[in-house]
Image (cartoon, rainbow, N blue to C red; front, side, top):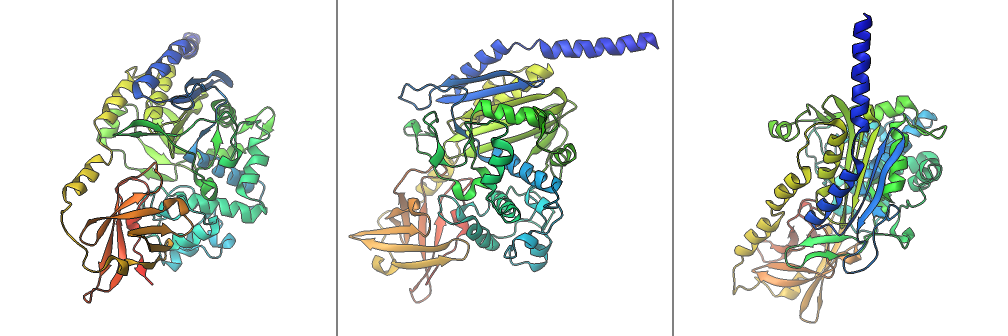
Length: 507
């Protein structure tokens, strides 16, 4: 018995020594090399271990062509990593007895509705909002809020027209709309906006001084978004307002601030003698509520992984016998990743100012240094995979190849002028300015474009501004048998903002 005890003690000591002997300087060098390999202008990384920050550092530039360097306090959009903050706010309200996970959403938002199904609409709970199981497809309906001035309430009302992708609680569809809805639930329950609630209960007491929830509050030490392009390489962009969708992804933070957030979560919801989240509630956030199928290919790519799911505001999986709570974030010109392994009290955050998939590769590389598992070159492997993909280049080239030259419209182009309406989005106007047709979107003025004849009754959309998620696109005018204009159909190839979900009819 004594021998067995000593053996167990020795194993624990060896494990501790193994984790403690991680070479942070080597990780630091690896991060900078990876940044250059991926051609990412700038990034900031933090690692926390056993309640301490072991690395928080900036790499590269805030903006290409300028001298400003990224540091540990530089602000980046964390995008969908904001969802964990929303879930934590609701967990706190549940603990305070102001809300229940099983509350029906309609108890708080009577107008809430999904795809014309009264039964489903009446049964959706607060819990359902946070785990992507209501029946909507991934990113479906994001065209409603993207670059729009609509209020959260108006966005939620429009969401009633988003089509059903699967049966209620019978699938996984990543829904930003439902987190916007959760933000409104917080507003109704507390009498304050969700932004005010999260500031008062998390950001301020955690002293996350560099963290804001609107681009109007950015400091001078903010990174500039960048977009990789085929024609011009990586180019700087501008900050896009996500104020109306902030509960889905509006938080802007720094690696040092996010380190504080991670240490609180890794310490059972408590930090500096303040209990931010009740342990029971936090356990619920990290309990799978919606499981994803894990393909054999995924298992081969990530050995040591056997399940993948979503809790409440967190992606969850196992990894070499450890629970991993993780999430990614994608904003116009910025990607991020948070990964925590509670058993090791290890947290990793990677913030970047480019739309390159480096953050996931780095998170796995760093995690595996502490696990002493799978010590391959994650950055090189992910980079090779990323460069072998064309994004939507093939989709665009396929459409361009099918263009038919020397065609004309079926009717006089001026007859396309008018107001078109889609119940999901609202009004879309086609006007004539000089010889050009113009298209404009209600409540989304920056989506304006000139229409340039493509072929027949189809026009290419020449956007007034560059957009992060899409560029090439066309719009076709639909005519009835009597050559009367009925509506328009969009074709804008991209994987995030689905214009083809809109089917506006002419008023």
